Amino acid sequence: MSINQPEVLAKKPHTGVSRTLFSGLIGSALILFGSFGVGWLASVSPLNQDRFFIMMRTEAAGVLTSVVLLTLGCWVLVRSWWRLGQKLAGWPQGSLKTIRRAVYLWSAPLLISIPIMSRDVFAYIGQGRLVMAGQDPYSDGISSVSNWFQLGTDTMWAEDGTPYGPLFLVIEYLVVAAVGFSTDLSILAFRLIAFSGVLLCLYYVPKLARLHSVDPAKATWVTVANPLFLLNFVASAHNDSLMVGLSVMAVYLACQRKGVLAVIVLTASIGIKPITLVLLPFIGLLWAGKDASWPRRILYWFYSGMILLLLMTLFGYLNGYWFGWLKVMLFTGTGYSIFSPLGIAVMLLTGAVSAFGLSTDWILPALKLFGRLAGVALAMIVIFRGKYSHLVQRLAIGFSAIVVLSPVIHPWYLLWLLPFFAVTGIRDDWQMLWVHVTVLFFVAYQAADQLFIWQFLQEDLVPLASMLSWAISLAAIAYLVFLDRHTRSVLPQLLKKTPWPGKRN
Image (cartoon, rainbow, N blue to C red; front, top):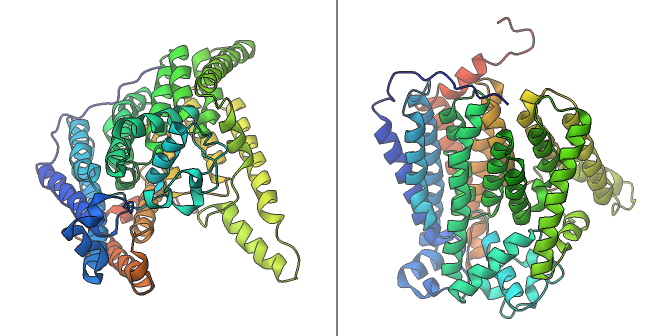
């Protein structure tokens, strides 16, 4: 794969960039303060005994104030992201440095916030304690841990095996062993681990973009400085961050023909969450090289597969769980989400079938099987068809097929795909418009979703808090899109560049 350096413009970034960076910092600080009242805390956390936190979390005024601060902070951060893109238009020299500074500044308050928008991090703690107790997290649910409910874990994890890879089980064990039984210190440790994935993306996204003649600053702005990225991979502390960072690193190494190292790094990514196993055939093709014959490609697939198998077998032997992760990945998962095309199909088909009084138990398993087979089929097509120079883009499409045709899609799943599309080029037309609209929707959704409200306040405050957050989000979107003299041109400019059917260019 040839390396083509994009043309670097001589002009300097807009002089108002510092104000934009500071406004994003204010947005993150508001999110931090909002998390004090509606972020997730374990019942055993000492913060629950602090007077300030008691006031913010047990009184209606404190909870609603926190909802306002959290939601406003999200939209101040979105506006800052938009304004940063406007002020760096053309991506002049020094833009990448400015974007990296933005990521550091905007992440700082989120690193010390109480977990928001998800409480998966508490499942990490429970699974670490399972490992410490000598139990098998692939077979045993977190409910087998003493005092598990007060540790903050969602009840959905009570009986289910972990969907994470064997390497992450080791990380979970090490965190719990290092910080004892402090849930707050464990959260901080897991957040720093998640932030290491952000740093990997911050380093390798621009490098991979340069290989595809895409401006590294633009790719980094779209991906790492993205508010959705920071909210999910820093504030929520999702382990997906490390999985994505390692996978981006692995693809870059493969593009550089450092195949053995690329497969080792990808194996580490699979060891966090096994979904990135779908990237292995593409890594093998990149390793084989541009003009490789099919026998050579097959040989490098064999090399890649054997290295992966050897390392995963070694992981399984050392931790004693062998290939339990494979069983969970293939045979568990019973739900669906409203963001998934298959999830929508399940709801519609269930309604139609139940109207005739027929059984609906078969619908989800059948559509789930269809989605998996269709996703694999589409991934196979892009593996075997297309130019070598488009291989990373084909990887992104194949990965997307697996994700989109899954019955469960969480907002942060889209962030698995974004770096690979960004480094191969997202055009400033309907493609960038799709990115912006997706960010607007999911920021609004997540700001109102999974607000922690104590049980004795839930009946009165849960619907009110959610409606208040949605009202603020809708007002903020209307202001950014129609009223703000600086940002109201963002979406119309992309619409103008979109090649609608029948439109003359």
